[in-house]
Amino acid sequence: MLAAAVPVGAVDVPAGGDAEADSVPTDPAPVGAVLPAARSVVKTAVALPGDYIVRPPEPGDAKAIFHLYSACNIAVGPEVAVWVLEQALQRAQEMGRVAGHAEITVESYIYRADEPLGALLRDHGFAAGTTYHRMRRDHTGPVPAAVVPADIVVRRGVFDDAGRRAAHDVMIESFRDQFGFVPRPHAEWVEAREAQATFDWSQLTVLEVNRRAVAIRDCSDTYLETENCGHIGMLGVVQRFRGRGLAKYLLYDAFAQDAAAGRAGTILHVDTNNPTQALGLYQSVGMTPTLSYTAYRRTLQVT
Image (spheres, rainbow, N blue to C red):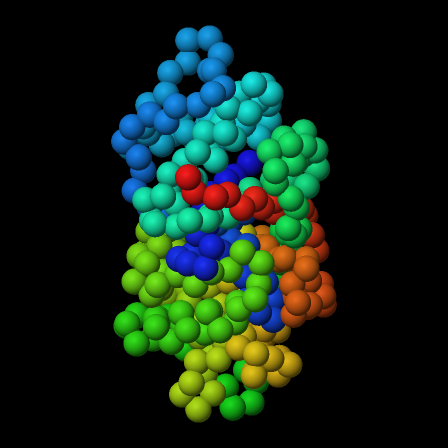
């Protein structure tokens, strides 16, 4: 379904998750280094069927690409699927070569029930790494305002560089040792956030203790148009401050805000193998799984 290159030991971070509760942003997003697209055609040993041609994408192709992506999840002939995957692998190696890496990791996130695509990935050397659930809590009426834990200051919105750096530091500390996580330089992280049309810095909430940022929640409008739901793209608590109810407060606070705004529910994604037992936390606040994804991974040498 999705594939992207991640240099081993360098430059990237999954766009969502949490240390006391781990999520994957969107449905789910590819994890990969952001590098300029190649402007030349990559040759492949697999011939395209019929009269198909290959060319670099252009801005005007966005709508067509969206529809093609949707169709790809419904029905793609095996020859085309093989060709697309092999192109993705070659492109991943190109990205790694341009960035100067000797080795890269390619990840692909697919619906857990999509066995044909899973078999295709396994046939190409991929192995299952973990499973993600898309979780949802429905709001059928008002949700009481969450009670702020003792000694906690809530900062709603992060609008200056100092605040953004503090939030980024919390994210990095929270996600250490989690599947697919590689820290992204601060400037790249800020640029990636601002490039998302469904995100605004006012949707980032930081919890502080004695003026130190210790927890973060990143919300977005990703599911506003399609499902009238709020979305928690990232929820993290630094290890020293776990077990104090901070993640649970951030969840209930998001539920209350979404319900007050007339949202039908709140959605997030969770790594079911998260070492912080995030899945149990989400279930304890009334969230239930609605979709499951498998994350496949393959390491490639850059030649």
